[in-house]
Image 1: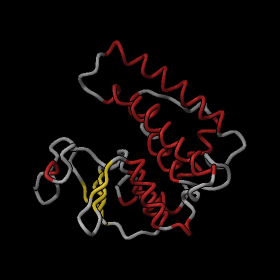
Image 2 (image 1 turned 135 degrees about the horizontal axis):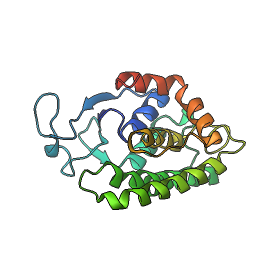
Image 3 (image 1 turned 90 degrees about the horizontal axis):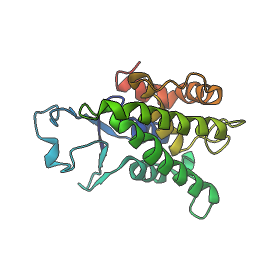
Image 4 (image 1 turned 120 degrees about the vertical axis):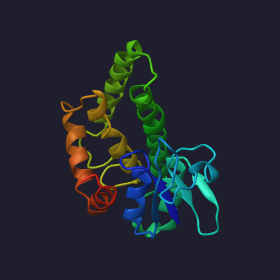
Length: 201
């Protein structure tokens, strides 16, 4: 498998999951400004949408969208229990978290990173994100991870997206549960390995 990524971007989430699952996954860095690959070829030729992450399987099939990719990766290593089994309510809670992080947090950051976004809108975007993170903080009370005591794919995504706040003025340092959680996730050997491989440590 090949995982097309950019350091610290949302592709860090499936990278972490691949490490947690112990899967052999070749990393291919994408320049998100030029959309060029290390060999000079055009990333659009592989993914017409032009964004990462993208997972390419050995048979040439591709899968885009991080929440779908992490579920696929988790299902390749069921013994690692990164996603509860089909039929277990905990699985749907994990999928619910994936959707929440994708729509409420990940997309919430979009106007803060977009150079052409109106400056007048950005304080509203920050306030909205802080409210969402405050809710997450409440949900983490008394838990090691989003589902309780077990790390799951949604934790990889929340950890990734939570790291973006420091770049765009979204300060969550007063959210004690969230900060303890981020330290816990960040200290996991697989997470450390992914961060190191992307040059983030």
